[in-house]
Length: 122
Image: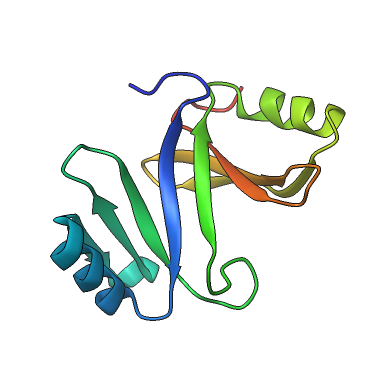
């Protein structure tokens, strides 16, 4: 179970998911799983931190994009707090089937960060 406000997932933009997976697996020993139906690949480091390779799309994922996802048990409440603190919601809550929900926001400097919850929305 994830703890509140803990970074739980990192995404790296990749032009070629298979090549990115091989690169990081060979160099760092990461376990990589290709998910062609989702146009995505997941990775897990030997220490257990995980994330994914997102296909460069020129919009949300540009070359060089690295995105952190932070766990929250109250996605909607956290989005309201972010807006009140000067951030901006750029993608409202979206379902990840059989996993949970995520949303994206930008901080006042324009950095995009994700939120994740495995809790059912209220």
